Image 1: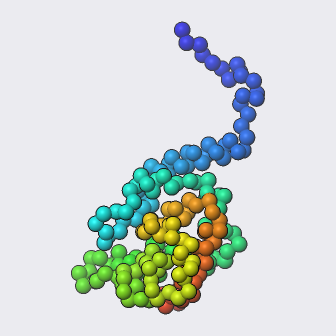
Image 2: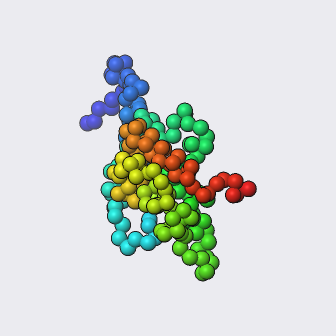
Image 3: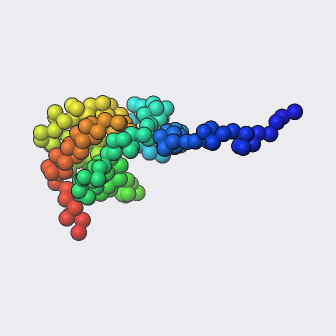
Length: 190
């Protein structure tokens, strides 16, 4: 017969959990949850015939512990800096022509959204960060971020889950350089 075990059968030391244990357990649960929802945060390139990275490859990058250890947006940043970083990270922003285009698809006269800076390639956060030839003084910084550029439209996943704070600060520096050179300005909206 099975014996029913009561918590009273164990001493108080058995039921003792430390903050680190709880944090580790929470991180494991978050990782599992995020990996199963990776499809919801991945972007699909409408112009690519074969995706470069599988959902499984992207799910392996998930490390929620990095979110607290090395946050992408720190408290020391201004609101504008934080907003600019998030605009480039999530890409759903009026700053990029591809976002505007996604709302205008129903219009058959609309063409592929070309970058306002270089007028050569379709506009997107990835294009501005890693491809746009009109951005001056960014080559050296782009080289430091080459590890995330190989994920193309999903560059935000290895960036967000990186534990390297210096790497994230380099990304913020690149964003600032691009924003400072951009012809887009929030005042255009008002």
